[in-house]
Image (cartoon, rainbow over all chains, first blue to last red):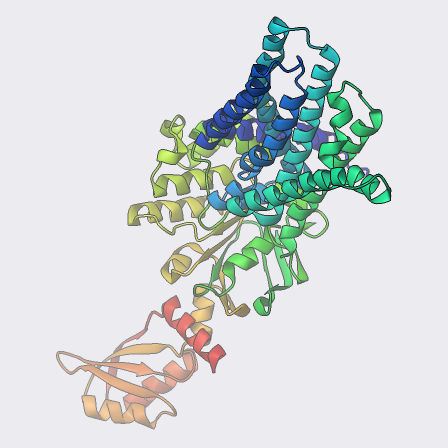
Length: 250
Length: 311
């Protein structure tokens, strides 16, 4: 394009992203649901961390990471249900989509805000490995890998939640749809475990987000996992962007 | 500035907008009139890029919405019906957010916000929280936000709904001021509002454009206008004289102190028909001392146009 304003438009895109991101993050902090989710997640995660400790289990967080992964099925739909549905409910969607903002800037701004809030949600659980270090000698590799896995899984789930929000534009609908999708992903992993080794088990393993991150919990960082997760997030966000664009064609 | 060509929008089986075309020039205030459910909001949503038409095209400030949506939207200020606001933000914070989304340059922003606050009488309300504002204030904030990018085109969907009479008058004054050097399209189902604010109106009913013109044009075209005649002479002979004119009807309003008649003519009362009326009355020895066209309101035009369309 030989449009002299292209560079300026790209700059505006960054400014717009910042404005959308800050407003969304602020909305997280002003929503009572966010705090409720935060408290419930931390209480549940803490409880699931403490139980094995009482039985003189080895000093690993493997179990805690696994249970926190499962908790994400419940937590993420609650974090993403408002993202676009709230704009629809408030009547702000119409101004948002008629201001000169690209759909992908809107999607990225909202996604990054949800990701930052998710990281803050996980932050207090850093006390778990510290407690473990006081009691025994945990291997730092699996702990770091476990956190990376949890972050990637959360990032993927948030992208799926945002996609559901763009598809339904309704708070309860988004929560229900993303919960169902995440449960199905979890089910794929469980099904894979029950199968004998073979092609179907490999297929299910490939598709299941939960099984993908098991090597990480052993401290093994595989680039293929990172690429798989990164591309799946990018693809999901791209579909979410298209869903938002296609709303204009209703 | 605003161009709509053959716009069509279907919601499932129902055709909400059916081949609507019109244009509005710079410095023109165009009213979009129609009963509730006529398709006014849908037309506006297509013009603003919120909805894509099933057929037809539209453009704002020379940018077609289909191919240059972002450039078109950069020149636009749009006030949707029931415009929503983020309850948690302060007025100033909201304007900062919208100015950024509207691509107002960072060094221009403070000035743009000040100008919008001033235009809508909100300079004292910068620190107020949006969620605590009254309906009238919220509407003013929403309108002021439209002005942040100093838009060439303003599209306002029922801007005075929910305002009290004083606020309605203020809103109309503001629209007239803004319309001097911009193009404004605004929808209303209050006809007196269109009459007092618009340079030109288009009438929409059941998705179709039924008529277009200045309020006065439309009145002349669609309503057989009545004349009020004041005369000296015999009332009954005057009535009989009017009856000799083709398709004219007369109604006696008073006998004393002067005779007053309301005469309805089949066509708009041009000079010829007025002359014929005066001649007929003169032959009945009546001296016409007053002849005045009756004011026709847009309400009557509207009723006539929509009735004709239904028939």
